[in-house]
Image (cartoon, rainbow, N blue to C red; front, side, top):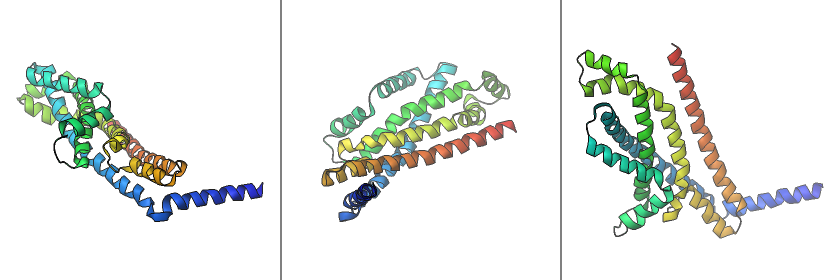
Amino acid sequence: MVNKEGAFLDSLIESFKQNFIEHDRWKYLTNGLITTLEITLFAVLIGFVLGFLVAIIRSTHDKTGRLKIANIICKIYLTVIRGTPMVVQLLITYFVIFGSVNIDKILVAIMAFGINSGAYVAEIFRSGIMSVDNGQFEAGRSLGLSYRQTMLSVILPQAFKTVLPALANECIVLLKETSVAGYIAIADLTKGGDTIRSQTYSAFMPLIAVALIYLVMVMILSNLVGRLERRLAKNDRH
């Protein structure tokens, strides 16, 4: 039994050395992680800005009936983006939209993931805006505030506080979705693990390492979201 355990441990150590130490293969994971975080960060920014604009257009139409054409365009955007797989959108963006243009793959991924995230962020923002009691809007208008002033000063601060945890969770979802970036040959974290596998013909160590790195990042973000929710709940009680 001892010999078997020792042999198993030696096998694990040897596999670890082969997959990560030899030829500095661990760099595939660290460089891939940096690329993944870069794509996620900028895609989140694009998604938040785009989603916010779409939410404002749609909620303005729902409340006032204005911006009909813009609202129709936003509905089409939401239907298409939310109704098709992320990986297909990524492939269309790279091979169709920018197929004849010499453009950085990471930039393409950032745009594709940002546009995808924007559709979900838009509905999160819109649900937050529409959840604010209509009496708040009427109170702002009764004080002589314009629609824009009421939206900026009264409605949006309340809506943003309501949807903040959901927005944070969208960041977690987006982080995991970037794992398909390898479909356009981007050396992200997942692709880094697969590259090691292709060189060592050993799938266990590199893929488990990729999974653990994603798990740790998601756990950290989930912990931050949990703290944020508790702080917001504490502020509400006060």
